[in-house]
Image (cartoon, rainbow, N blue to C red; front, side):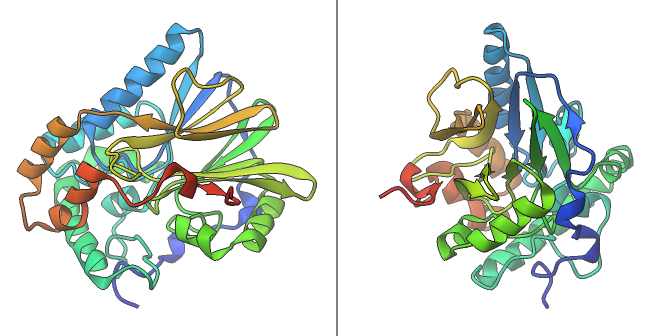
Length: 316
């Protein structure tokens, strides 16, 4: 299997092990932040959102579930992003893992499935090579990344919130991708919720958002994928998305949201300064570069999805 499509054995884990020892959290709100992709302006906005919550009396925990690195291909921006993120609750994404622990033959570590074009895979491998060169000049940050877990299980409001990067079997798994929900993955979801005992599974990795809810073994369960915090997720909409989990409704309007088991689970827009980020991005990744070809249009214009495309089972 070619680089970028393989899944290193170190990425694998068993669903039954993921929530054996959940960590009790005392905050009122969780922000699950996947796919920041090195965007400092998105991080600025997420911190502003958290501060607005705190001004309303809500204690907020920021939880980064990986790929907070990707476009931050300069020494100063690499150090800034990692120093800021590592102050919070963090688990690894494949990008962060490969920056700290390069795997032979893994390429970008994305484990891209067959439906992803080979050009995308090749460009991601090229981005990773450059990012590994930057990371190699910051051994202290690499060491901090090596110490991070691959997943976290948080006990929040008496419920188990499993935070993964990919899916409950692999750091880079695509089982919680939008494409998997479109294809129909109910049996796999039921197995993962049953084995893990999780009430909510929060993922990212695959770059498109999902909000799913159903009953599994007489338990109300929710799966959510925030797509990307650091770039657009919806049609003609450059805003990022983060997952908000709380016992209260959000202060601002969510893109989509549901209430289950007393929890409000919402995908919240991250309205960062797109022009400032594109100017910075263009300096780091000029026209024709791997990142510009793969991602610039999406950063500026979002994807083809509407909010209705995000909710599963589909609402007719």
